[in-house]
Length: 482
Image (cartoon, rainbow, N blue to C red; front, side, top):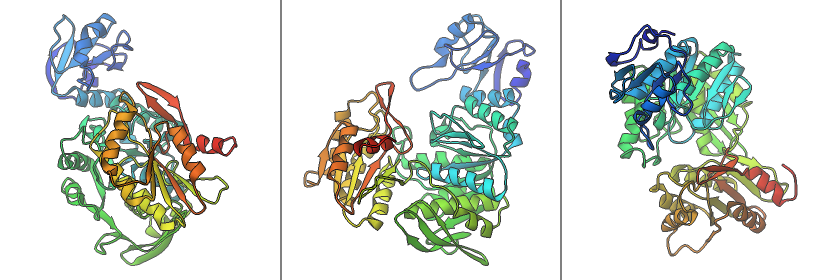
């Protein structure tokens, strides 16, 4: 592709290159760049791509796309923001795949993975279309599953995924849109048919300056959506709505003025049952995932497909057939007289919700086992400790993904929230040993929550991933193969 076509939608400042030169690819990593490719110099957290311009040029980069003019003799084009530029040239390189798909974006702190999965299932079953998915758990093209590294991939990978989806016959794609993705322009230039907002609670405050800043970043997605779906029971709903230039569809379990309301809610051990109330329509439905948050997730997904043309009656009927989502209030079969739940809860709010869910059906104690990730927001560690201590009958504090931090230091941060007066807890740093201890001490009627890992099948120590699947650990304890 000629450079001038690649840069058509890029905010160019200075051109010091032949715009008719042929470009054979795009790279933002000097280690993997090939001769004939365009090198995009991005300013990252750990390193600045501008430092590697000489290396990229030496490997045959035909042009450098950067924010600052290179100090070496090389063809270059400067832009105001190289992350936005990467998104723009990636979209052009892959022939603007988003224009061939009806896209649904889901943002919020908790619930994104479940909501995107439910929307995918509803579209497939109600409309009969092939759907792509980009998310925390997995990326999917129809039924084909692809590995994933982060909630929303870098813009180049996102555009590449969308192109494969379009080429393989997908008519729709559902994307989890994280605050990092919005702040770092990973979905820059993408227009969503529907944008969905779930909720906001403290998270990523190592990345955002404050909750208001976090909310403002989240709300930026809605200026690029044709329709918006917003949970008006959430305190930041007004900020999301203010960022929406289009009509807003609202959902709630409390406010009858919402467009879709969940009422007559019944919380069961393995599901939720409720009535979905819309203007002139009352439909009983259920979702096979326990917890009041599951009602909200179901309402969000139903609202999204209604904006895609699905009747509420059809959405409510099909919701009852939707499968559970791995790592989200997932009941692990043990054959024992106590219940084991695996849940991805890794924020104070999410931890509170899964504990409260367990309290709703536990006949015995609620035991919560969790840790906190290293190299991530430290402010939430004592808050999670406090939530677990307040709501659980017993708490087991262990490791999650310590990454480059000392596991013991992370645990000490959590213990600040536990408090000196709280006695019903135990610290076992090794997560496998902690799970074994909890399983060995569970009593009839107890609910044991394994929180934080969810769908993940690994732990991260330093920079290395080690295989660790909690389902396998539970099975091993009982002497069975997973």
